[in-house]
Amino acid sequence: MDKEQELKLAKKAIRGNPDAYGGLITCYQEYLYKMAFLYMKNEQDSLDLVGTVILKGYQNIRTLKNPAWFRTWLTRILINAAKDTRKRFIYIEIFQ
Image (tube, rainbow, N blue to C red; front, side, top):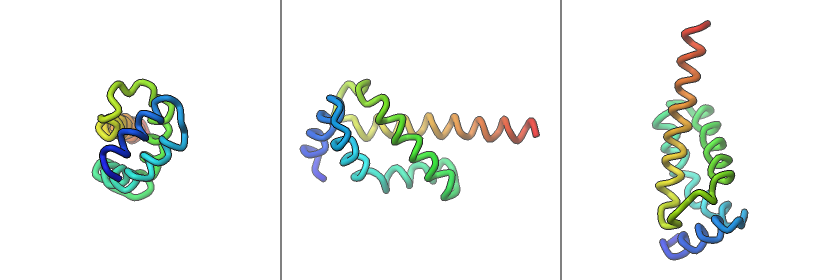
């Protein structure tokens, strides 16, 4: 997908079009998984993280100020979600 198509889909997604958001996610699904794997280090946790990111992104798409930054915005969500998840794992390990 070229940048122009991505920008059009991002604008539609911000306006509430779920199909546009789905198209963007389809475009970036492999990227999201690879990024998640860098943080989580295993397949199942990475897939869980990607699912969380997709949902959080969909719920908050209207907060995206600049449609050209969709990938960066989604990456930030992924990083924050990964950090939250890892904190929970550490907390559970300490108190078991």
